Image (cartoon, rainbow, N blue to C red; front, top):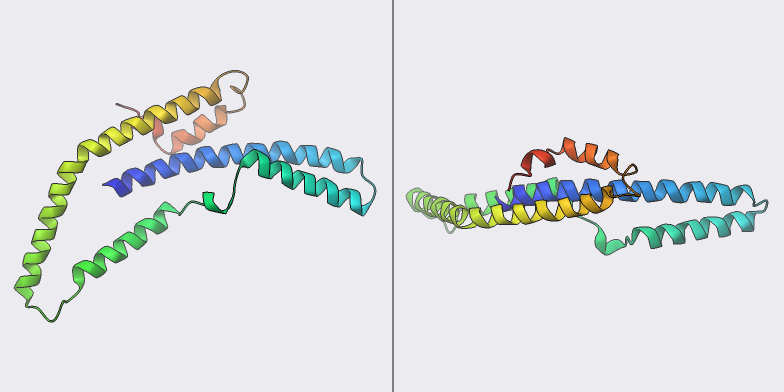
Length: 165
């Protein structure tokens, strides 16, 4: 239950992050080309490129710690671990003991889902409110025209369909 919710949140945040990153890179790239037009030696080109990379680093605030795990890969790992634990034969126990354990685990999972379902709804509601605030900031003047495409990209994720609180 949480995995699906977090995967959806990750997808939306990834689109916002990549769109902002791409717009910054495009803006900085044009300034690099303008700066390189005025340079006529190799040292100047290297310095211009170094400044370009420094500006990108400052604008994007990206580092190795900000790398996100692909939600699909995380889901696959979780499913593999779950299968390993569910299918493990502990000390050659009899089939019916394994079946009882599986039933107990299913009941536990059902109780956990019932317990956490309101929490997931609350989490989703808060996430939608925060994303709405971010989008309001990004689409307010003077950036309004620049980030219209972002809203279109979010529409492909079904973000606006899930905005009901």
